[in-house]
Every structure is written in C-alpha cells, then in structure tokens.
Length: 358
Image (tube, rainbow, N blue to C red; front, side, top):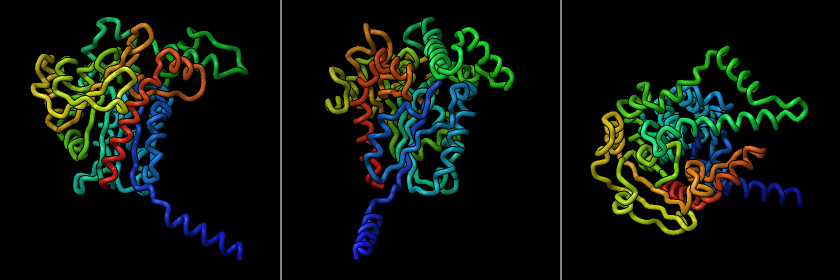
C-alpha cells in the first residue's frame, strides 16, 4: 500500500510539473566562457518553464578569435542539438556575443516558416554589443591596448595556476606556445578584430538582407549599453546612436530602482530621432538599418564604472562571472561586477514577462 501511494504521488508530481517550453540562449563574447552570464542564467531558471542554454560553443578562448561568422555558426550548431524539446527561442548576446547571436539567427532561420531551428522567435537582447563595430572608442589610442590586456592577463593566470603539478611557465613562453598553436592550426587571430574594426564586410552583412530579416522576426528586441566607462564597446555602438547621455535621458523613461545599479540609474528609450546623426558614414548606415527594425534601448549609469573611476563598466553591466579560480577573483574584486546584478534582475524580469505571453 505504501509503495502504491508513493508511486501515485510521484506520478502526480510529474504530471503537474510545468514543462520547459522556452529556450533562452546566452552567448558570451571575446575570450569569454559559458559562465559569464551565470547570474542572469540563475535568475531565468527560477522559472520552471525556461531552459537556459549557456553557450560554450566558442570555448576555449582562441575560438573567439576566428571571426563573427565562424562563432555564430558554432552557436547555431549548438542550438540545433537541443532545439526539438522546446517551443520558443530567445537570445541574450553579450559583447561580441551579440554579433555571434545575430550571425546564428541567419544560420538557424527557416525562411518558409519564419522559425529558428523549428522554434518560435520570442525575445532578442544584446548587452554592450558592438553593433557599430569598435572603431569609435571613448578612450582613443588606449582602447586597443586595453582590449588585449585582459586576455593576456587571463591566459597567463590560467596557465600558471591551472597546472599545479607542473612547473609554472612564464607568460613569454606561454604566449609563444599559444602563437605556435594558432599558426599551426591556421587560426586567424586577427579575424574577430578585423570584423569589430569594420575592416571586413561581416558587420554590414549582418545589418542587411537575410540577417536583418531574421532579426526582425523577434517580436521583442532590446539593446543594453553603459552611459560611460566601457572601454571596449562605447555607448554609440552598444545603443547604435551618437546621441549624448543627456539626450538619451531626455528621450527615455527612468526605470525603477529595482532595475538599476545602486546609486545609479537605468533609462528605457523607445523612440529616438536621427540616430545616424553625427556618426561616420559607415556607422551611420548600420545605425539607421538597426533602428528601422525597431529596438528598445536601455542605458545604464553606474555611480562609478570601476575602482577610482577605471573604465570597467563593460563587465559590470552583466554582473559577469567566471568559473572558480584566480581570474574569477580578479574580476570580482577589481571590476566589482556584482554592481550589475540589479540590471540583470531587471533583464530577467523583462524576458520572463515577455515569455509569459507565449
């Protein structure tokens, strides 16, 4: 009798548990990992109807160097492996991952059914993504060095601390070995940089024709960017407009404190005139095309982008995390990324609220 009761209870629990019907794909950026958007993933998975796929297709780090198209194709392959179990699909692309996600849409779209890997498009979000490339920076000639430095430090730290049974190698020898590996496998370490610097047609190709049509199929689209302090992706590229922070504040609606960093602010901008004004011609064309699709923009202001005013808002925006290790500690205590958690709480509420209508 007890066994029968237990079986009946188990069957009842199984039958009443809501099925996971929404697939949300989180895509990391340059030299990132599947753990980068871990805080957002946990907030989304609090809803039993949501399955989060934290993409690991572009790990390890050298895979983010061979171009946006290659990275997007790997994400698309990863999605196809799990898509059949779900009803809708949404994306959150962080930094270069925003371009990966847009490239993946082109790969996944079924033009006859307007679906992606057989799934209904729902929400598409980017966070600090270089939609207009990275030629226009807020920090002049310092920006290229700052882009390279985090990856160089991460490589040295990982090699030194992840091999406790081996003799630690110098950063010089480690970089020499990495360069040899990249050369021997014919990986072009310059491709992703060339894409971001608009030295290839990749970003332009993502902003027209089939790629733009695929993006337009998502009924909800949002782009997040920091008002200042992002040394990798300036506000103009993340929000595809040259409007100043003051102009964006005037055009937007201030969100509640629960959606903003402590002692900071968040602004939702739905309509913006003349987005291409004051931009160089190439960036202006990209901005105009993206704005034509229709995006909500969210501008985030931090009290301070980083310790002593350092420009670390890029990782702070998404409350970036790393797998346990020295690199994770460095990011946590140097970049104070936990300051971005309220922003990710607000993003999770937005996504879950939109998915509830499907």
